[in-house]
Image (cartoon, rainbow, N blue to C red):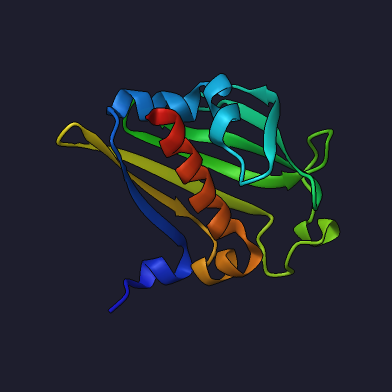
Length: 160
């Protein structure tokens, strides 16, 4: 029976053949993030990023088909080589929060989500568990879930 939690939120688990420090650095170094943190065919840029507890970011994923998708967020918790917790809020290019419906997103998509990334060392490899506070079904329907999978594939590529 599927865990109730997995139904009400995105849950992805991947294991990377890389040391935990290298995986954590890929999530926290802006230069490395720009190499993998966007779905296939897209690119990410940062107007601002400060990866530390209380730090904020303002990013833009440019999609040749759908245009730019701006996002702001705050790092709620940053524990080196262990955990990242951050908010993701749809925004405009100035950094003001906006209603996802105003940019053509599904009316059920929340204006803000919380992403939790936990890293665990297992026999020299790194197990990553990602949770996002939006229903997995909605994330699959909107493309957010497959985007996470593509980005984690990209991450795997730069780690090897």
